[in-house]
Length: 441
Length: 175
Image 1: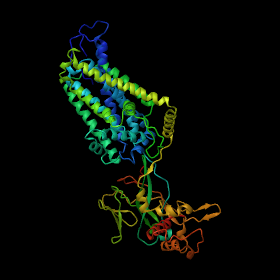
Image 2: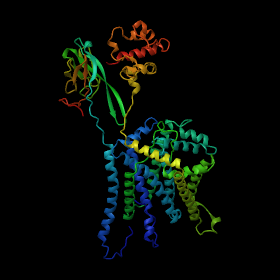
Image 3: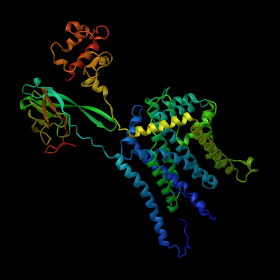
Image 4: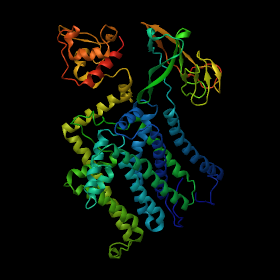
């Protein structure tokens, strides 16, 4: 379960031994992500008309669905945190020097975990996900030189569509997990695996905490894009709050630099740290590589801590924002407890074949008075006869109904029934007549 | 674990070895166990009860003659987040008190068709043949075609749609 540093002969305090449990933690959280992600894939459908629906089904109908999704949601945030702490721990303990393979794997793993989090955010296709996709689009589109092309490749089209969701889905469930597995396979083959109880104690305790947290806090699921009002305030998951807050302060265009270029450069520098010749820093530090690593990582920590706190504080301080966020949370809670209503899938098949759904022309011109299902209606003193069972009457064959629509008087009908001779095309009249003919009394 | 040959009597080696063996096992079992318990509930198939709706087949006035009459009925099928409608072919036998037969072959579930030239039902998949009253003539099917519950309401023949187990000699309603 754990990868272990080469044995050093020096005495290591027990505290140092405990810090080494970050590797076991990262592996445990990865296992949780793989398990829960696989389970979610049994129900999730990646298309704009089904994504929110299926996630909502997982959340509201399936046993353990809310818990498993919450494990996946918060697990990804905890994984980001511990993958980062793992890199910090390795830097602190000279991992870039003593164990290059582990160092590279750990930095790349952190980058892949963040990429998986970023692509996964779009999948529920609620309003939050939609806006996070928008932001990803903006960040990628704002890249110097390659921006325009990269945006098109990310979206799969010239605007956000179901193609975009499919791409994020493939990146999230196939590409990043595959790369992560490749990385793990490479690493775990290289090291001798030994079972260390300490690793398991920490992993077990953190899992217990995550499981209880997930039980108490369901993962957020906002309204679908169609349902959200214009005043909806989307907020990203906590591992991306720093970016969200930073984008408020940097002028547009620079966002791509802060959100993508700088992180990519930081990752690149960290990965190549073992080979960097930093002689110009020799004067300042006996171990310039460690200095560079720690500077990069502590800059990240400061940026993330400051910006995350700033976003929390600014949301709390502004009364309207605070109230709106509270309203949204309350609304989510209400929706979570509403019964789930399935949607009619093959509506078009029904339209063309038989029964219920009236033709569009009927809905436009007839349904106001005669009712959506031909049940008839009343408006004040006016009564409109039901059309159900009309087929059984005299002179009400399909051709009769078409003729009646052209000239109601000839069939003995009084106003307010009026002629539709010019309002409807012949095909529309026939479609209405055929539909009315099939109505059961 | 780093070996410590200097273990004193306060920490017997066997306890330590047991800890090294069973604690990891316990933790892994706990993590996987709790998620897999959830997974079992999560993946458990949802069985929708067979609907008891009475579905119109045809008005009684259209039911005459000696040969089976083909009709199509529509049922609603709720599966997960969706409701789909399905068309099923049925045969009304005016000669046998308007009995309604499901067109589903009791062999592997293809839909049989009525062949008026030879006066029998034939299954397009594996060549089971059934007589005009639905009884089995030849082929791999183990029983005749399945009748559906019927009633007459307001001059119309109605059925409750059912599906049955394949390949059993007795007729067993699927649940």
